[in-house]
Amino acid sequence: MIPQASTYAASIDNVILLIAVLVGFWFIAAEGMFFWLIWRFRAKEGVKSEYLEGHEPHVKKWITWPHSLVLVCDVFIIIGAVQVWYNVKQRLPDDADATIRIIGQQWAWTFQHPGADNDLDTADDIFTVDDLHVEVDRTYIFQLQSRDVLHSFSVPVFRIKQDAIPGRSIMGWFEPTQTGEYDVQCVEICGIGHGVMAARIHIEDAQQHADWIRSASTGTAQ
Ligand SMILES: [Cu+2]
Image 1 (cartoon, rainbow, N blue to C red):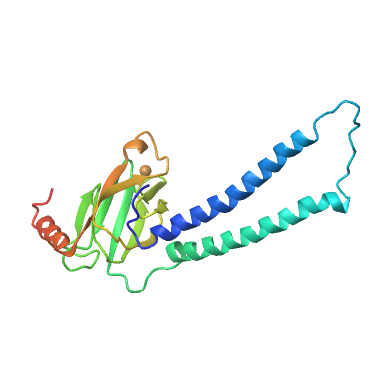
Image 2: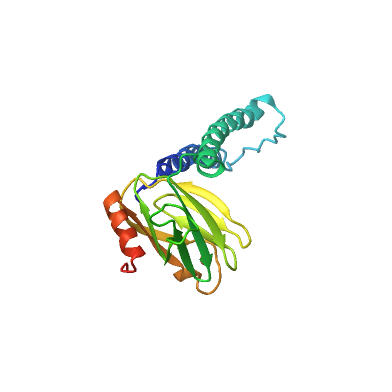
């Protein structure tokens, strides 16, 4: 029951729910049938068991019909999953409000914020360790990098996970939808300190975010 704090969090949860419901239905149906058959055709005194090869139409239909229906369910899962995957991972919004850089290393996250001019790689960029500051209802593109080994950037309230690979700058995006302070985790085993490679994301309203930029720029931020 983790809050949904990004524009795509609900759609990811819905795909998981869709899979759980469809798979759950067939799980219960198959196990129910299985135990009913065990009970119904248990050994009985004086009754010889029937030998079935499985080719007989009246037997085979019990495989082919459920199999076809399972395939129909698969189509729904694939359509739902591909749509969400495309939106979250395959595209970048072309109207993004800001770009940030996220750098993983053993065992901390460095966040490079664009600063007051909102341009990355300029003199007023704000660097923080283990504290990411963003503004609610703004679309962010991130460039994810690693200085050493594989890491993975995860913000559970956004439902985003993205591996960081040394030598590559991997692009992604998110749009926070509610203010608050939430967990950031490394979700790729990256060495002995992996378990403590946690950070915080601060989702602020416009005023708070402007105040933070001002205080961070003048060196008074915590
Ligand atoms: Cu890590």
